[in-house]
Length: 110
Image (cartoon, rainbow, N blue to C red; front, side, top):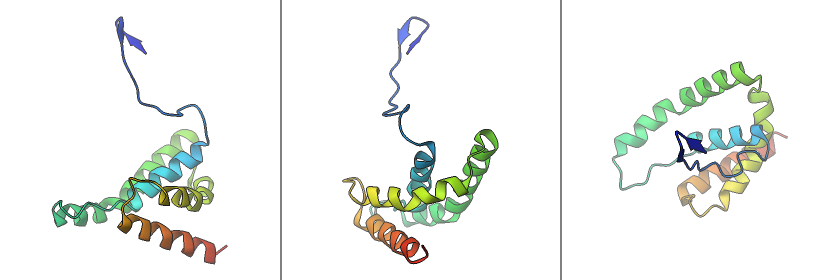
């Protein structure tokens, strides 16, 4: 992009491809199953645990208000996105365990 005759770089990999519901599922998975590394203060993980659900809810409510896309459209993407995230190098063993539990739980109810 150019702004005031200066080049700006925006790191938006695949911003124009894919399904927006899958991107939203990625956000939900990221917030819901993030595990703070053990070398950081335990209070940080406790704080994250207190805001996870409200952070997701507020974001999705606003997104739905602006786009019309709600959780009902996002929900089918949660398990596939969680499965894809299992193979990510950046996913910790603790996160993998949580993701696997979520995938198994969803498979039981289908």
